[in-house]
Length: 469
Image (cartoon, rainbow, N blue to C red):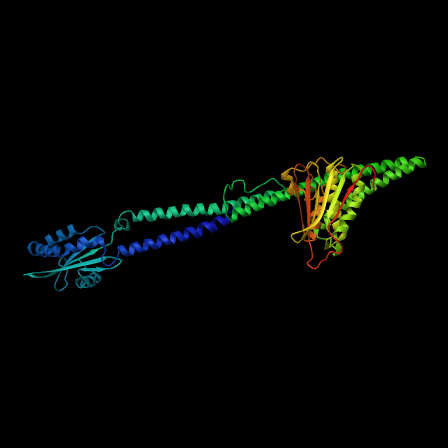
């Protein structure tokens, strides 16, 4: 897997740590190789004594004794010693680099030590009755591991390794959720709607975790929407098949029927055609509202008149179940699309009538609340599960998926209500009421300049029985 983000995070972090440790290393080396390094101080203190001793050996034992002494003092690859006379002649006849002579002269002028990064030159002079001598020593700096006090070098090494581990963990921590998110995106694109990227996030709280959870939420919404559309296709195909089959059967029977039977068949065809037209109109309305193709025609209108018209028609439907509709409301002027608002209110009221059942009681209220027009429709039906309340206004959602258009519709009515409310800058919500029932509230903004056109406080009780009014 190409973990580009991982390396983009890991490498800069680790390189920064490595540069910091490298700078610390150079600083330590500089301090250790300073003008008066600690590791050279013992030899420096001994140089005057060694110079006296070397001169004495040379005078008593000659070159052989001096050679043996200097060889004993010298350490391979670490130090070399020379004894020169007053004229600068090396007494053993060995070659003495000009650089050493210069550094020795400088050392005599600076407390017996001349420092350089290549080596350190020590010089100590002594005078005997037979002459003047200078003992010169070149000390090559030991390895850093031998010069660093304590475990500083190991600390630097372990720091480099530890910083690599820490940078690795940080890079992994930041990039892993994004990798899961990418994999989940690929799975979602392949049609796996159950994929979730945040299952292993635990209690993580940061921007990346929020992004992953937003993705999971989006995936859930997509799954719900696609499942709803699948349910719609299945439901529509089933619901369309039934009236179409009845129409075809009625047409077949009508061809061979007498006038009375043919009239009955034609009435049946008309009812099924109306049902088909209603179903298709709902589907098209939701599609236009969801896509924004439907442009509301706003005008100044009386919301009370719209509710009156809806309830007048709702009486006929409520009569079939002996339902009672009570209405109380104020006359409120709003800017809106009369047809769209009528459709929204009608869907809420018809829903309440259906679920209230035989002898149901429906309360409709229209009043002002917090600067908005509030239309409240309350029934005494069984209500809905609490977890279903946020889903009621989604297209094609039905609390009971087994219901068809003859037992509760296709789940489009409340979706029309939601879209109508949004088109008017309002909102819609639902809540269960005690002891039982459901209350749907539709809120619409009231123009600041609107004025009532007639008295408020209209109150009436519309009771429907087996006969329509």
